Image (tube, rainbow, N blue to C red; front, side):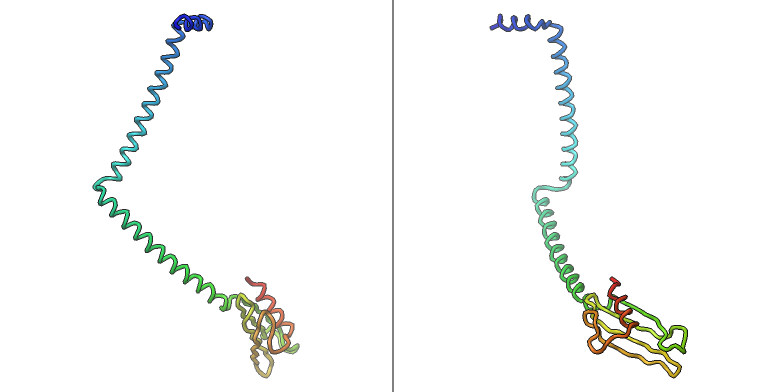
Length: 171
């Protein structure tokens, strides 16, 4: 067996100096790995010590139980808040969120665009249209119901249509 090893060494032309250099290189790599492992072990021990300061197994279990209880309470509170947000979101679908205003001159003899059509709509385009007509004799106020962007009671004047269309485009 020894003869076969020395024959292999002779075939590769490996000298004692080459073997010595390879073994020194391997020792350096092993020393570096040991140093890295010692550093990692030190950091891990330090973290463990900080985590366990003043704690034994029982108090650590109590701490974990408290945290789990706090988590459960936070989840219940989150669900309550989420439910309230959903209710508010549903309620907001009935509030006035879209506004359209068209100022105009109702009669040719008056000026200054003192008449106006004001559309106040929900996100579903339901709401009211207020039309204020100003003339020399006085001002008159008209109210029309709007459902799905259309008047339910009567035909809309051009200014009223413009106000409703402007409100529908407002998001």
